[in-house]
Length: 213
Image 1 (cartoon, helix red, strand yellow):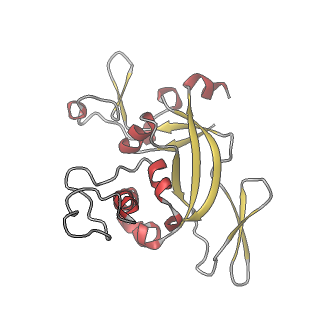
Image 2 (tube, rainbow, N blue to C red):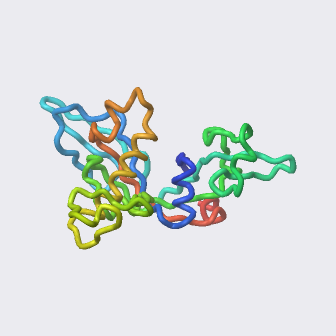
């Protein structure tokens, strides 16, 4: 069994059933000369080649693996757990929240089964992928500022205009992606860098089922 960390926003998306895939940076990144990654049989190894050399590296998980989720939490005096993603008044616990990295498997409440793993460039993501990532579109309230707008549709969604839906999902996802990358690493792993990423698809299972594996 393996662990995986999600921030509070993405934990909520998992709990609501909106998030069924996550993208994680391939580390180390293939050298710049690499244009294609080749899978080795049905295993979780992926082979890449540069100008003169072959490199081989392993995916972080394989289909069928069970992942337990680390998330922001705190412990109350009776020994039970409060999770920030589900707390009605998160500010009431300010100063007591513990980093996901301090969570043990016993405290975990979310377990996932990996259903697919592939590797691709970040910019290969599609509108459907944005939705499965749990991204929230930005057309509510202020409307959508899509590149295809015409006079009179700047302040509301315009579903008859090509490209509007993708734009409304893409902008919040790219902002979310960059927030998860440390500022010092954004040149290498930020959205504009278009890094290679592992695409990990999953389904939620019960804690009992997860721990039984």
